Image 1 (tube, rainbow, N blue to C red):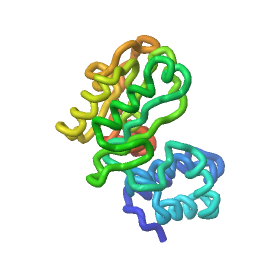
Image 2: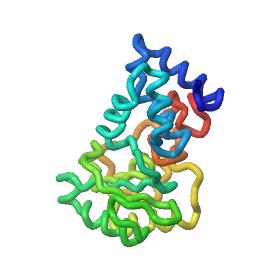
Image 3: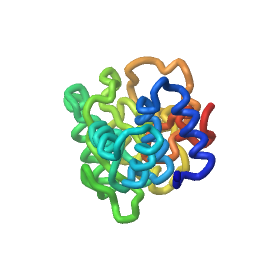
Length: 206
């Protein structure tokens, strides 16, 4: 018997229905479990196993392979700084240091208040707009250490319920890898990607 609320169960059924085999829905359902609990709990991964026909161990193997699935409690804002080669050469390490300094949180840690989690990550696919930063997987390109500090102060002071890449780029970004011709309407509400069809945005599917 599922422990998920009725609306989450309906979303799970809808997601599974998009695939010829329920096992193929494991990753979308992991995002659903993250939205439900804030991170991937053993119970959440057990739910995914039950819905998809995988064993709990198989679900855990997927969850621990991909970096965007988190199996430990996170802060409200997951700040990810790219330190791969392009970003490193253009100051990514300095941006990471600025984030750590402004939040008081070293890489790989979460503060006691559960406001910030900080991590350095590999390539975010925005080499032309390096250094790249993400907040709850919402991208900011061309950020400087000063902008990174300002970003963290803004998050701490304003505590926005949602974050949006276009808004943060305007406030705290610099050179972009290319012109973002299409406005991003979906917002992140937690430390997981904002996917409307998966139900991880404020309004669910768009």
